[in-house]
Amino acid sequence: MAKVVLENITKKFGDVVAVNDLSLEVEDKEFLVLLGPSGCGKTTALRCIAGLETPDKGNIRIGDRLVNDLPPKDRDIAMVFQSYALYPHMSVYDNLGFPLKMRRLSKDEVDQKVKQTADLLRIPHLLKRKPKQLSGGEQQRVALGRAIVREPKAFLMDEPLSNLDAKLRLYMRAELKRLQVELGITTVYVTHDQAEAMTMADRIAVMNCGQLLQLATSEKTYGSPSSIFVAGFMGSPPMNFIDCSFVQKEGRAFLDAGTFTLDISEFAAIIREKSASTELKLGIRPEDILLERERPRGDAVEAEVYVVEPLGSEIIVDLRVGESMLRARSPPGLVLKIGDKVWLIFRREKLHIFDGKTENAIV
Image (cartoon, rainbow, N blue to C red):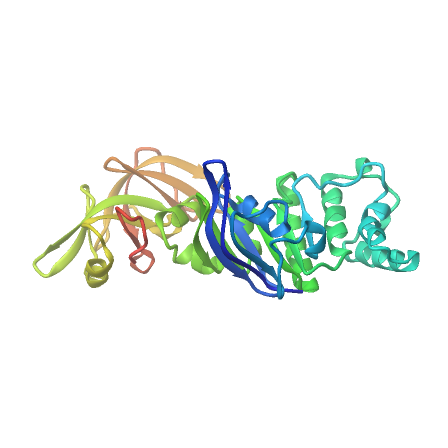
């Protein structure tokens, strides 16, 4: 296995900068996810690692080798595509054995490795079938098997689960992660699905407009986002944002949202140090908003119930606060109707404050 290193990679298509000065290190045996919306540059970055695209600037290293000028076949990587890319005229056995035959392994070696891989993926009963006789999940396993059988230095995966139905996608997530840990293969995985990224990744690289915005563990990316974009992209429902002004009076500091004010004196020093202006955004995740029927003591925000969405294990409540709309996540026992008045309490230890101009995190 090997470390994968990108050093200041830039890739343009005409006037469009697909990847802009991207630098990151994927550690040996790590599962790293490139996450972002369509067009953010994640697939282009993956294709540069694979050798399917040539970067305009920068270096790519796999293990201790600089691979910029190496063709894909000599980089010792295996790529799994969204479309599976199986040979339709070949049996599963032959699909798995094809890369080994290309390396001129003996018939006995091919047979041994194919059967070992089929056992690992729990598909020995499928070896005689053709791809058209397989379900989507079975085809995905064969595509994975064709990558695994080669024992490459790194796996590159481009949204390999996106063609599966929701239930099978959940199952294959767990299977993929189990396999990666079991085999200890360095893996770079591309997805736009933040839930997929959070459940599978050792670290997540969040990208937008060709740039790396944050590289961190799932917990840190979710709990301490570096910017408004990262905060809004992670989580379902996403984080709530409220435009506020930073106000200081009588030795105290407040966020003034117009319809309510919030005492944030404990954050005043860091806001003064890091903020480029007095215009801020308050961020709070739906699960960090408590709903009360009666007005509690301390800071509380009056709201009107706009929509109630029961989801069985929880309720998502859309709330109108002045001109703003917020979403809260609540246990299923709370009975609310459209138009009800409620009071909101924001968990202080879970508040996020962003600079209104740079959109970077302050708190």
